Image 1 (spheres, rainbow, N blue to C red):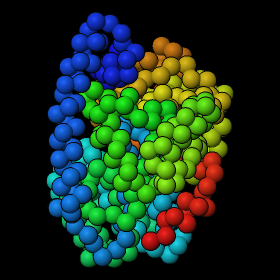
Image 2: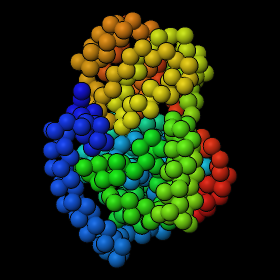
Image 3: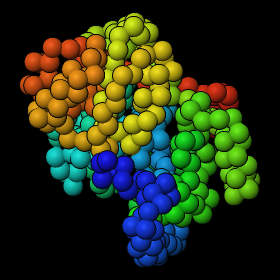
Image 4: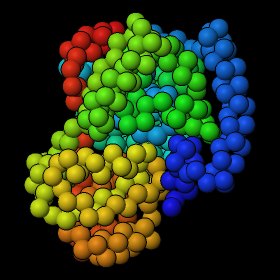
Length: 370
């Protein structure tokens, strides 16, 4: 069991051993300190201290839990909507796992890539790759990124990726994504649970979006909605699914090819490889598409793939008689840069996933008026 899996088994309560109980008690003690620090920080921002407001509208997309909720496809969806309205959005990304995100760096301009993935980090580079009518900037100081976007790139609106807790830049719309498969982070803040801040922070949200609602029972979704209605009676809640859009070979994906329909390779025995926050969700998506997933090989979120990992992937694929290896677009960013991947004697498939609204799409778009 990986360290990440062990941690989740403890904080979820799945691990009922004596050591698990001791760990939860210790983590709970640490959580109290973390929660106090977050509360002090939020109180400063609530009072307007250290907050910069810019001259163009800002839309923030974020979550309240650690791990993947679908921010990247949602940011892409919002930028596409804004571009269709004739706007010129710029995405402000922290640049997680970038070479140096203390610097504010323009990753792409009007869809033209300006740096390599190692400089930008995987998520920012992926956004830059798929957003042909937008710009992407990385940097911890979002206010400075905003200034660069406005002064140098002519941005008339900004979309802040993973911005809910990054409150130094004022926003006009706060969108919070909640993963239906683990909506409230085991009801504890880090490190006892997965909450980045207490659930009371959701009161800052203007819009709540439930993601992956097709991966849980309908009763679970209604239960989440009921709890949200009690906490946030006047905040709109929309439901979405992660919709597979296209299946690429790694070469097609890396070189701008068109790809194929999602079910093109469904008769292949595939091994799912992912370095994302919720690898079970990726496997479930492949299964729902009709694929026979013979083995899964999850790595940690934002895993920095190396050539030795490629060797291990090949060994596992051979051992489980897989016909192909399937990866996410985020993982394709790093794996496509490795020389060892070219030596694999097995197809590498890349599944492209987008956001699809179950209902309320038009109302959500109308709520994006800025």
